Length: 325
Ligand code: SAM
Image 1: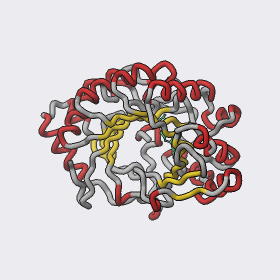
Image 2: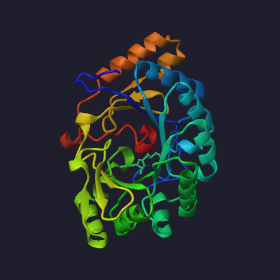
Image 3: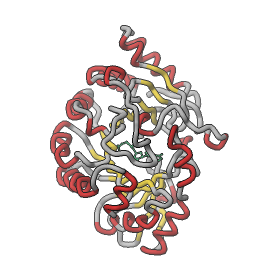
Image 4: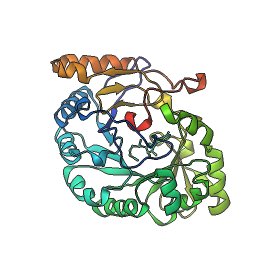
């Protein structure tokens, strides 16, 4: 497995298939968004070649994300191709809108599980946050994913002041009736929406208080040992944990094992820093497998230790949908 200069072994790759999305969440992208031309983005063959090189280096866990991965026409063949390269741990983060139709072929192609992003169970609140799409379609997608066994399902929720604080407990209550882990992701500032995200962030303490007030105390699981990037808690009598991913206020940089491949073929070393290396241009210019592998190894070595937010460094080059959440 490739190591960075701090001795962290990197074995987890997140791939953003596209910067396009069929929603416009207020904290993620502006409503009028300029997308990259398709010719700037990796083709299916280019993605699979890069995945093969990452796998040869020791990557054994892959998450497909975006933008919205389900709007990419080659999603199912990509999953099949990644599976054929010997990767078993393939997951996807999706807004769920197109999952009702895609869950069966994705399962058949080899997808292991999904994270579905849902910030509220109230249709009007949903529409205010996402601007487009309907909650019913997302819920249909969620049940379809469960029915075909894309499990364990995790639900990602971002709480935005003035939009969905009132929905915190309703989301947490899902863990009382379903085997769905509900994870609250702290809002992070990026690019054009950085100011909005900073002004509207709701702290983990406040979210926990909402839950405790309405549903009772949260019990810490496993003495607070991180499950991936999430600290897990449980409500009494629940079927699934509740997670908190507080990247800004409670960073997990010491145990970070991931890098990100953006849709335009850049290797992004830290979600919250703009350091990247372009792999697609050399690939298209005819670099050999060995040369590209060396580039990947060299970039991973340069992975920074922590994010720069404590020093006031806000990543401004890209918004989340262009990085791959
Ligand atoms: N479109 C897919 C989805 O909605 O899940 C995948 C991409 S989306 C960028 C991945 C995750 O990032 C979502 O759960 C979304 O809520 C989260 N996200 C987007 N912008 C964010 C921000 N500024 N801070 C924290 N999380 C954010």
